[in-house]
Amino acid sequence: MPGETRSRGRFITFEGGEGAGKSTQVERLRSRLSQRGIGVVATREPGGAPRAERIRSFLLAGRAKALGPAAEAILFSAARNDHLDTTIRPALARGQWVLCDRFSDSTRAYQGALGDLDPTFLTRLEEVVVGATRPDLTLVLDLPPELGLARADARRQARSEATDRFEAEDIGFHRALRAAFLAIAEEEPARCVVIDASRDADAVAADIWSHVEARLLGAPVGEAGDGA
Ligand code: Z5A
Image 1: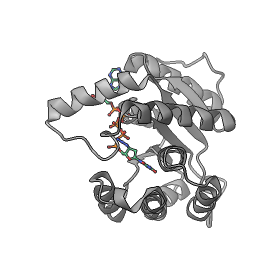
Image 2: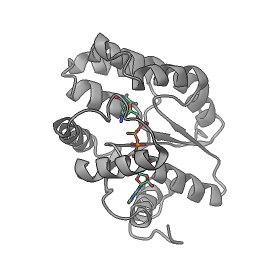
Image 3: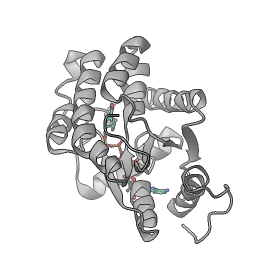
């Protein structure tokens, strides 16, 4: 990453299926790190910057679906390129921590594993777009897809929202997605931690905090300190 220094902030990504609680936990961790006096930028993908948000609208409306998974992967990566340049790298360079709701593992899982793309294509795309700006820690929020979809459905009904391009896929898609995220975590244990996201939000937040402390703040797992 050009211009990266030793005082670079930390980069944490949240991954997992639909309704796993990623947005909820990004906010919990943002609040807790802020209380510690750590500068935090909470962001999301696709999106996280004005141009990238425009690409998000196009993708989630399903307007790129007919182009196929390779083109979708390129569009998600184009949004990521802008997000990295506009939001993530400047924040890390300022020494802020970046918490990102989905990142490149979502491309690997959704477009790669489920779109049956050549892994070399996605690896090359990730090398070009992400480069050295890899997450320090990835929290894979894992739960049975039926539970995640029920949570997402309840929220959607409460807000009178329609389903998006990926929410509309069948249960087999969401089961395969779960397996794809678990496989990524197994392949990269130094970066990824699997979190049981079927528990209540406080228990999930406490677990996440213990891993953040252990891996990025220097305290051992199990000594989470001052509550979630
Ligand atoms: N996508 C892709 O294909 N390729 C890519 O490279 C990238 C993305 C980056 C983005 O959708 C879509 O883009 C996504 C993958 C694809 N697919 N879909 N669909 P999005 O950003 O709109 O949605 P999402 O990322 O799937 O997140 P989500 O559905 O909004 O869920 P969430 O953030 O994980 O959960 P939440 O908003 O925190 O919680 C959901 C509800 O459950 C809410 O009412 C909470 O109050 C409740 N909740 C949260 N935690 C709990 C617990 N612990 N217990 C009970 N209830 C809870």
